Amino acid sequence: MDDDSCDLAIIGPGLTGMSAAIAAYSKNPDLRINLYGLPFDSNTAKKGEIENIPGTDKIVGVDLIQKVTEQLEKLNAESAQKVVKEMKEQQGVHKVSLSISLLQLEQASSIHIINDNVKTVNQIETGFEIITESQKHNAKAVILSTGLPELKNSIKGEENFVHKGVSHCAVCDGALFRGRKAVIIGIGNFIARGTLHLREYCRKITVICPEAELGCDKRFLKKIERTQNIKIHYNINLESVEVVGSNVVQGVKFTKEGEEKEISTDVVFIELKDKPNLTLLQGLDIDVNDDGFIQTNEFNSTNIKGLFAAGTVKGEIDYSTILMGDGYKTGIFATDYLEQ
Image (cartoon, rainbow, N blue to C red; front, side, top):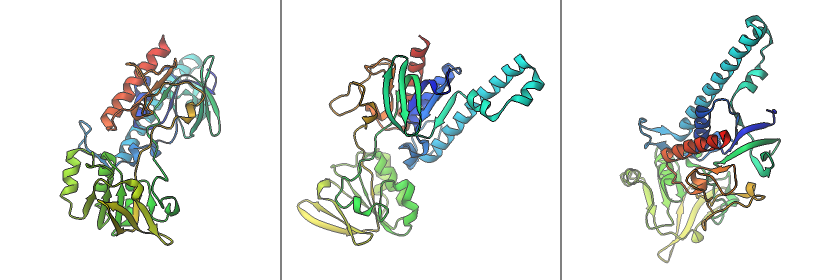
């Protein structure tokens, strides 16, 4: 196989994509697998404490990604050892010890994490062409596991205060605002985890929720409700919300029950999720549902032969265990397809 080719390309190396890689390797360690993207920029890496993984008490999202990344490195070491053993059998121990290089060991690895974002996926006669910001590869099959992007510039004043008190990751930046007041905007477990993370640092936390309920697990909600320095405002029309200040964030305005309110704050964490971003597939006629999620069959295969989808990009619930399982089974299905 050429250096610019692989058997399986996985776009989005978060928890879903890396689980798919582990499954594909386990089923067939002779496959060459490329993962594209930045693992530590994934949604899981930006989560706070995750408590619903069987066998694990609790783990912070970034630590979970670190552990899975280390697991992939161990699989690669296993691949390299296999190649060295085969070379010794063919060429003799002494010749191999003199000729083996780091480059050869790298090429012997089965799983390659390519820290480059994919711009375009094209269908070609042999499968797919993967075009990144700096290189081009061919793949026989593709798994799309890009997750859901952040919804940015959706709140008035947001764009004016980026890096001046507006952040899109409470887990990443919460510690920078120790002893300060914080506002976090959004809904679901992602917001609940972020809020619970902030209570370790911020003296007062205000949650602005666009729905009648926070939409998170009750386990998280009970912890939030027991914390005295957290206040939640429900049923807030996000179109009424505005980040205000002079050179830095100083407050947030919003309308609640017809009454205009303004609260002072030092930071605003805006953590809203958008619909799947499928611009990299714009040259492919892929089926999506009315909500913009990729449609797949029972084998997580799309309507395009050789193209699979896994995780939240196809509408799966954003639970770590579900994302692991969906990625893992998609890795198996893609390997089955390649072996046919």
